[in-house]
Image 1 (cartoon, rainbow, N blue to C red):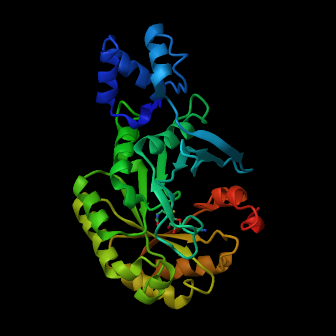
Image 2: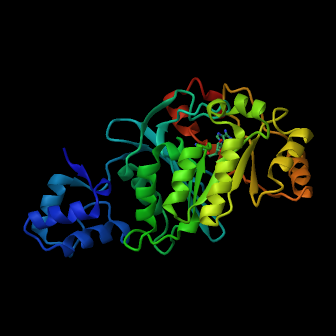
Image 3: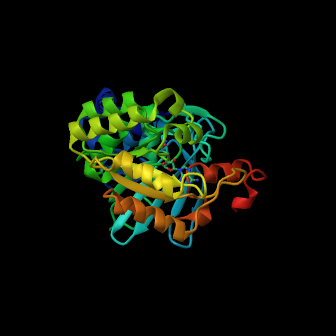
Length: 351
Ligand code: SAH
């Protein structure tokens, strides 16, 4: 079996190059071809000795996934469905807006959190993605950009619960942000979590500058238990306290995500309860108008209802923004593309 290059530590890869009888700097050269010069094969690495290139071909893979489907929406949102070596599929997206080139990547195949409105968790979690599979999403999407363009932002908002795969995620992000990787600023990375307090505290201890977004979705215990079932084990106040701890430790303000579901959590009283919960905190609320999922009984509120909700929260002193929906035509919300392609009948009405 060939080994995936992106899943190896640079030290281990360098040791392998030396074992083959070549100087260590060739390892750095190979990695630079992949990270900087967008090589997807060993073949074209013209300054790497031919003999080493042949050994690399025989034993390593630059990319271990296959692009099983690609779709570009009219607004330019570019989505890839990648098939892993074991046949499992994950989705990732590239979005362009003004100067920003943002990618959204997945951390797991499926998701174990079971949020009732989300397509990713409908069939539970199958496995964590490896650090190589995480990095590969980053590089494959980056390689779609024209040569003079660079990635500016990374959001961990695809399939899966990010913090359930914390070690691999941090390894992949640290590499992405290192000078030998893509040199992206840590502050340009947003990790979105359902709100696992222990993992949030562990992330805070790592003392990185990654931005943390917490999927709150409800201002009261009862409603959150309904929408985000893991909340029954965790509790709303533990989530909010862990977010406070993250801010205290890292100095980075936390964003609370709030998916707006028509007549479920978009009422005036919900906006008031949300403001009460967050007004005393230095937190930001990002409202996400629901992206409908076929067979799931929730609807998106009207634009007017979204505006009113935002106004109520803002007027009570909480910083708030409304997320623009991109790529609706290509099922850009978490887990929707995979579902449509794997279960066309179940998801037909989303096409
Ligand atoms: N597990 C992480 C990442 C999930 S995806 C988390 O829970 O944060 C990022 C955000 O999109 C989450 O807030 C998630 O609840 C939300 N989301 C999921 N399905 C959605 C949909 N159909 N429409 C709008 N937002 C959705």
